[in-house]
Image 1 (spheres, rainbow, N blue to C red):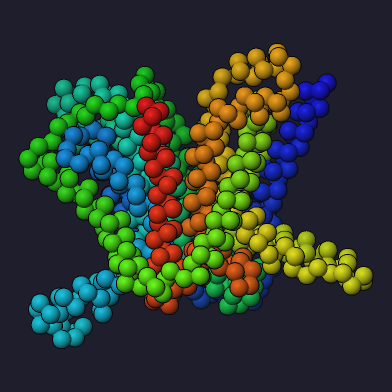
Image 2: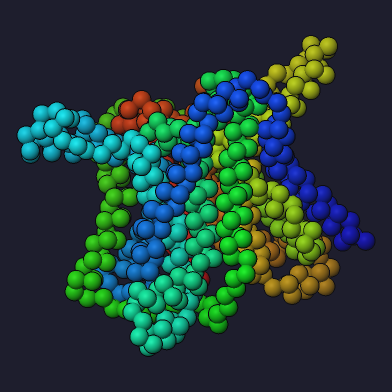
Length: 543
């Protein structure tokens, strides 16, 4: 009876978490179905189709360019031996630590008409005005695609590289023994076997591209993400913003459905499950030089140049950038990120443990519901968070108004809104990592603990938590860094006169004065390198 009673509490906690974290999505869908004949109809008849077209082009362009960059690099690192391979295997993940708006600012500064590149060209060739030559405009939709691909390709690089290493080399060798070249064996063997991993990575990249606000806003590219922001603050129509958010969700769900439907009858079975570190090909001469040069060029453009430029700004403007504001905003960012990490990890442990206690299809639903927030872009998430909070505030204020005790915006106007939004958005990261770590713990440990008279709670705290320390650390770091970099939700939900490092840096980026926030920008990048180090170290130790 004691175990059944405790089990009911696990069930209550799990379902409360699942329903609570999915509540904003439910309110968003409901609000998007409400009538708003003026604002939304005006947008529909004028600019909304351009926003939709730009969003789709952005998603397809970023996904395609990420494949062009990541798949050759993944194949080279997984199958080939060439100079610098060990370095590139880890270093090519570094651009993930770079917020997209920072790299966008750096290359805009370099390639604009008044930038050093065009000045050098004019001096070298004697050009006097823009009419004398043609130079690409980086602040366009194409430029946004390039900037986003440079910071998002590592998702596909890591997943594709791992998928190739998990494949049996004997299949590739057998294909080559039948007369296939390495390129032919790649398209006939390696690529089909990795299709599921590639699709998952491309779906993640597409979600991140659609969710981007800072880069497209800085480049003045109109997408659905910027449309939500402009509708909210320009027309003050929460319903119209919710309808645009509904269109974004529809695009997302259609893309996921197409990806899964295309693989509905595919099944791949392999004997080999451990990573293979023996190279299939030893490159030499021109091929080795080309491989090293390609990897070096990508790393240089995506990470080294931006960090070098930011470092130069930080040195030149150190006195202006190293100030009390930096320390205040850094403390506020660290405080919120740490709190959200603890909350996300704690909730995910409780939900996943409930799944372990009651293994059934129904027990998976709380975790699935709680993870739906990760699909919401930051601007959409802000709308989704405000809807239930303002509704609750309205009812409480009406109830307490006769007593002259109406609290006002006691939820939506405080840090609670940001913390709640971050937990909703990044819970899925913690859940996935904790669930993966739990799956590697043998059920026999639970049985042994129960046979010794320990309750479910005691088993969790004394048996599982110590084993899960590594997974908890990894998940906590990932959530922490995502919170440090999150921009649109913070911009829209922050209380008056409250800044995080991300909003602080973006304000200077928008004013073309990143130099004055260069120390804060470098701090965000350097902190972002921490989880990448632990992830690479974890993979090396695991295999």
